[in-house]
Image (cartoon, rainbow, N blue to C red; front, side, top):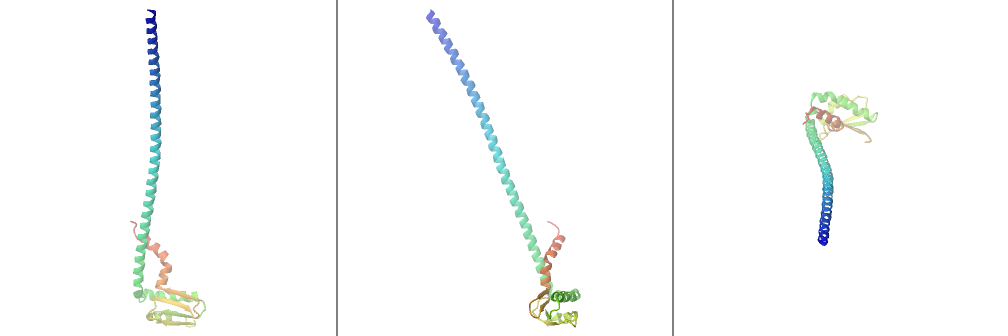
Length: 193
């Protein structure tokens, strides 16, 4: 019997050792699985954060592009509006020179033009209907010749006789010089959308 006891003892010892190794292997497998799950969770969270950051950046870029496009559309609409306002003003110039308000302002326009020319002899060109009003506004001692031109733009142009200096005091020239300030005033009077 001693052999049977020895074999039984060896079998018990082998079974116990196998169970111990299996338990250790199972514990190691559980630890590896937990470490793997934790690693996958960390990498997933990192990937999600990176993707969210990319998407956030893309959304911010898209919003910036949309804002710029919107601002550009508003600026273009304002520019078109101002162009229409100033074109309408230009269309009124021929009738404006016949108005009492323009005739009252004309001596000041003549004086501005002649002041810019200094003491130079000059020629003032204007539409035919303005010749007498311009002549009345010119100092008789000045060396100025008035020249009526049916094709002249509304207002007047003063040119030194040598052609070196030209002062555009037509309504179109005045509007062009005043356009930036007038544009701000027009836009200030228009309600914002």
